[in-house]
Length: 98
Image 1 (cartoon, rainbow, N blue to C red):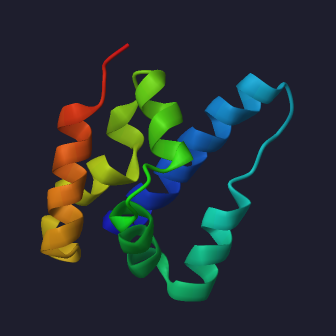
Image 2: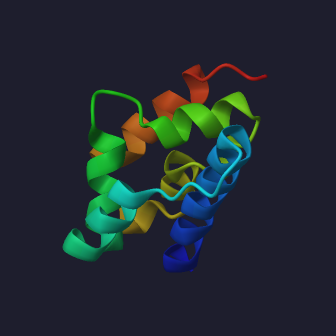
């Protein structure tokens, strides 16, 4: 189930960015990381970064935090590290709501 949720998160980000840009926008670096590392390790790396990802920022601003990787991580705690869980929880709690 976790593997189907991750692409949903990416597609949600792509849709929001495409609407903002007025043209189709792909999350190229995210897809590259997934191909290179695998989906779980790529998400771990994205979530664990000190800097909040562009995807999280965009989705939170649009009131779509449930599609962010951080939300998916919390819905599937057995698939991710304690560090990823803690960071995800903190980000979601601290993110402003629109």
